[in-house]
Length: 412
Ligand SMILES: [Mg+2]
Image (cartoon, rainbow, N blue to C red; front, side):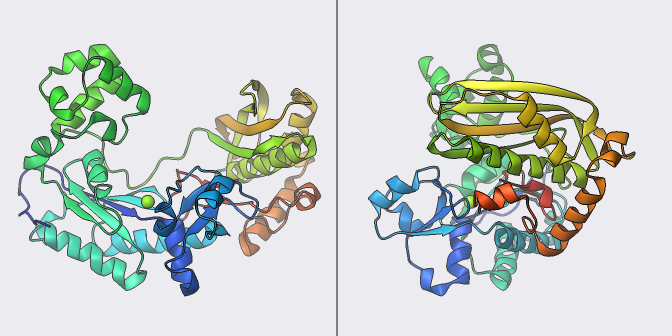
């Protein structure tokens, strides 16, 4: 590990912190009997997919997104645990708030287990990178002894790349003046944000490594890939204009989806999932004091057929019971086919500062009481009989857009 002196120039200093195998690490922290064990974390009690796993499980080639059946074949002794969204949110909130208070206020929570810290405006408080890392480490060790890696550089993308360079518990500093040299031998496909398809397109023209892009004029990349090409070229030069976003703007649309177990033919089960998704949409809309005037539904079958429907609602909607009733009456999908994935989106949001006549007439009081109960006893404390009957245990999971103090970002 080499520590470089900070350059007191205009270059930004961005640190990226990535909690390693976060959910599994929390489980091992809370229950010492699980330490050094291969853990598979699933989305709730009935989850069929590994949403994350401990490093002990990764040694068997188990990865996020793998089915639990395959993971069990690879490591029969592995332990399956249902995710505990509330606990993970509690710990993440404590960590990010502590770093904001004691290290730098310019902190962007990128997801529940990742954050960017901008030292650009408080660099005078730290002598060098070692000092910055020390401040992060002392905060983390005082709170929870969980594994994490740190990357430091002049841009968010390169700091994130650096944090992923050594895991778990790695520290990688790529100083601004060394970024181009450092990136040169790296494959373009390894850059954060370069997808498989984009990498393939570039490879067709013989562009595999960053140094090849560094040597080209920007126009070659923009002609080829438009905005994405420009972004890749800038990234290879170590240039970025993306700011640190401390306070995230309210979303302009909401969506929730659920992958179902293979061969789900039971339509009542599918409707139950839809009802959970409607409940999440309704709760978030009420929390945001919005109504959605456009609802989008998509069902994907096991044979990869898509059935979609867009419904316009003039007055807008935030009542999940009315939304669910509307879906049941208006949406038809092909009975007899296995359903693999369901999705609901709420678009074209309008402020809900005035209750519409329809809302007052319908479940307004019921929803207010329900929201109060859930606020007091937690998500899923009260739910329709259909959800209880079908035993949908996985009521909560965490979206990639999770932010501090935001229950809006939990989904099923
Ligand atoms: Mg992570």
